[in-house]
Length: 338
Image (cartoon, rainbow, N blue to C red; front, side, top):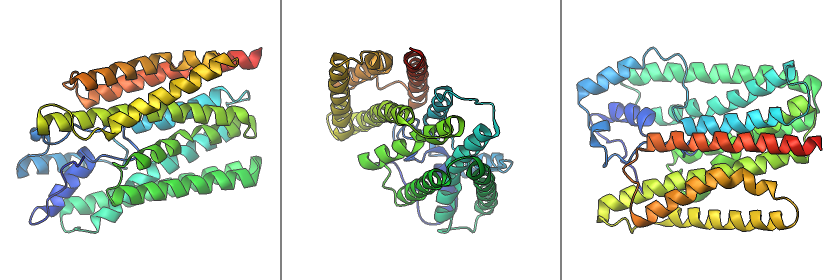
């Protein structure tokens, strides 16, 4: 599945700036992407005047922020779960430093990708303005990572902090390269992006608890499992929308749909097995989001439900995630107090 790429030629810079901020399909934000351009032509096929007005509206932007609520959800909710389940004093300087570190790394990727792409054509004033914003964002992110690193290295095991920080930076740089090479539509890239985002629970947990134990890794596994399922559902919807446009039947390009079905089947096989060996509470956590996902998969199979915008779909996924993490926190807290 390919989304419309920026045109090359006389309008290269203008065509680049707008799609990047409005319609680019990010590896780190797969759960909240725009509709395919061909299905909503008015969002891409704008006049020069409209482009100028849109770009001028962004000149006041002080830093670059990811526009996709799916990415924010996938990094924020595991972080909050890690803090809530860490069994410690979360009103501390360490917690502040961990949150600062997570969001500094999270925001670091956006300007990296932009600066790599803007080298193609930086002649337009809009590109130069956005380049300045990107540099400012990079400086702030580096400052946040430095400050948080100093605080955490003084109070927590240095080796663990260095391993977490190095791994996070490696994932960010790798995902930026994937986005630059336009490989973010691959299933493997989508999954790796989600695994990186949901790892925000690890530094948050360690900042409060003082170390990483089985609870931290359990939160990470549960978060990644849930978020991968949500990402595959959104990608399957995009796939079905493009297939419907091309063939009128919605029967082509089904790899994300097939992967989503396989993921749900595998997930529930494991959950039922875990329930049989004494962990039925795991089933309760996934009931609400899985019910929504199976409903969507059934509708995709029958060719229905594709008229719902991806924006609304993304927010519905966020609602399912809120229910999921609420149950995760309540059930795991209840078990830890027993």
